[in-house]
Length: 408
Image 1 (cartoon, rainbow, N blue to C red):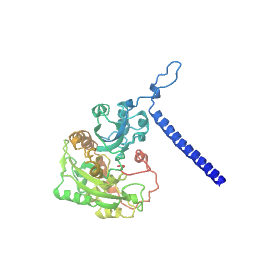
Image 2: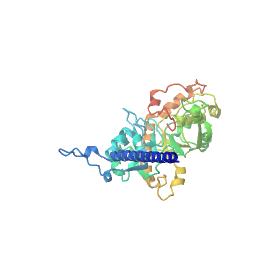
Image 3: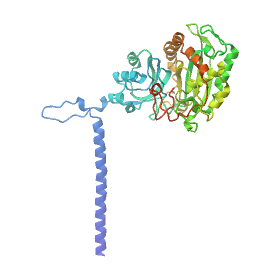
Image 4: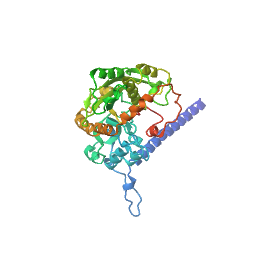
């Protein structure tokens, strides 16, 4: 009996020691976490060391700039830039934006060097020369920012129009449920290829406009667009894209006296050069260089060589957040990402800097007319499988090889 009591007492003592040891380990872990947290709040660069005393005073947390996730609306004319995304040695939209944000302390030096430190994400990449009317980026910013002051340090063809607080987990690309692009071109591009037409004096007839609209609608729905990009195989699931709508505006005459049309396509996402090839093939069909049967073939597993329209008229028009707005836009904390308050300013900017540049450049350089001269030489023959080929330098300027969505 005595031995049993001794064993029980020893076991109780051992359990007590183990319990106290476990508690001490927990306390030690908490102390380490507090120490790490304290170090984050210490501004070692601003502490004065007093003579004979190397003890540093902790930085006042009240002076630390706290940043929260925001959505930023910006517009830009990409004519002289090598795309949206930062690229060493290249003039890009993001490089100009980040330099201005650093100067005005919207971001830290760490975030300037590594954008992921500020949780930066663009809704869609734009390629070399492509403009954006309503681009959206997500980024952590201070509670108070001066948009007017920032714009004064941005080139005149780049403007930030709005900043809205968003949810902590918001991602400008992932939460974007659709993108709308426009493609503006002289209407003579769709003229019958068997007839000669004057660039300045050509005017579209109503029946011909209907033919353009009918052709564009052939793209609508979920289809396999592997022939409308590079390095895509028919069996690749990402080659399937959902086109919600593809329409054509009424003809309008620019200040230069040339008639233009604006095509508008809305889809969940787009691949590299997809829209330019869709436009290129549509032009060829309407002009009579090929038939609608070529478009139907292009959507099958057959590999075809399709014409790609010039990049000048392509613009990222709008990025859509309908699902996000339905869930958070009416919660009393967050504003819906519709940017209706900024629309007047945005419209003035894009008319002055984006579309004016398209009209002036096309009238002066006639890139579409030069491209049309090469269209009859296109055979639309089957092409070799280029899924493993390397892109040329122009295509590679802004490519992120891990993801090719929205590279137009």
